[in-house]
Amino acid sequence: MVTEFILLGFCLGPRIHFVLFGIFSLFYACTLLGNGAILGLICLDPRLHTPMYFFLSHLAMVDIAYACNTVPRMLLNLLDPAMPISFGGCMTQTFLFLTFAHTECLLLVVMSYDRYVAICQPLQYSAIMGWRVCITLVATSWAGGSLLALVHEVLLLKLPFCGPHKINHFFCEILSVLKLACADTRLNQVVIFAASVFILVGPLCWVLASYMRILLAILRIQSGEGRRKAFSTCSSHLCVVGLFFGSAIVMYMAPQSRHPQEQQKVLFLFYSFFNPMLNPLIYSLRNAEVKGALRRVLCKGHSQLL
Image (cartoon, rainbow, N blue to C red; front, side):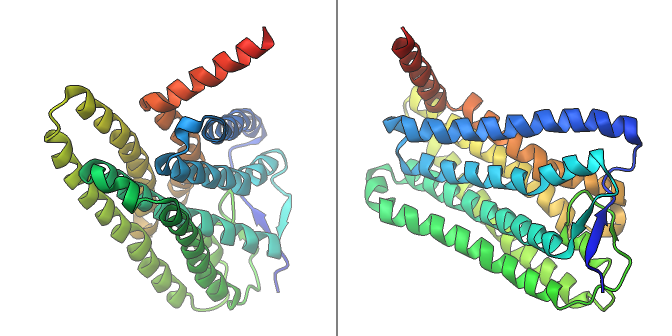
C-alpha cells in the first residue's frame, strides 16, 4: 500500500522553478496581506460592522485558508521536487481544499442574497438580515461545505492505493488523486459531478437570478448617486462570482479530455491561488466604504504617532 506521494508540480527545470518560487512567494504574501487587511479593517472600523462586511470577513478567512492549504507545499516542491507528502497529509489537504471551495460557493450565494435584500427590500433589510440570521447563514455555509467535503473524503479513503505514487499536480487535488487508485472510481466521478451541479450550477443560477432582480431595482432608483453606489457594490461581488464559478465549472464540469494535464494545472492555479489574491483587490478598489475605512485607520494611526 502507498504510504506517501510525490507531487510532480511544474516540470520546468530548476532555474524556472527558482523564478516561480520567487513570483509565487510574492503572490502568497500579497494574498495574506490583502485578506488580512480586509479582516483588520472590518474589525477596527465600527462603520463596517454590518451584515455585508460580516460575510466579506468570512470570505477573506476562506481565501487565507485556501492559500495556506496549498501554496506552502507548492513552494517547497519548487525547491525540492522529490520531497514526498505523506498519505495522511495528502488526504487532509484534499479534504481542506474541498471544504474551503464548497464554503466559498455557499458564502457567495449568501452575499448575493444579502445584496438582494438590501437593494430590493431596503425598508425590511434590518428585520430580515438580523445578526442571528447572519450567523446562521455563515454557520450553515461552513457546515455544508465541510459535510460535502467529508462525503468525497470518505469515498476516497475507501479506495485502495497500491501504486504508482506520483501525483501529476502541485497539490493533492481529488481528480488527480483518483487517477492513482487501484480500483473502479466511477462512483467517485459520479458523486463529484453531482456535487458540482449542486454546489456550482445551482448556486450560480441563484446568484444570477438575484442579480437580475437587483439590476431591475437599480434601474428604478431615481437618485443618480444611489444608483452608482448600488451598482458599484454589486459589480465588485459579480466580479468575484465570475472569477470563482467560471474557473470552477470549467475544471469540474467540462470533459477532462478537452483540457490537457498542464492546462488543468494552470486553471487550478488560477482557481486556488490567484482568486484569493484578487478578491481583496476587487473589493477594496471598487468599494468606497472599504477605501474610506482604510483612510480613517491610516489617519488615526498617523495622528497617534504624532
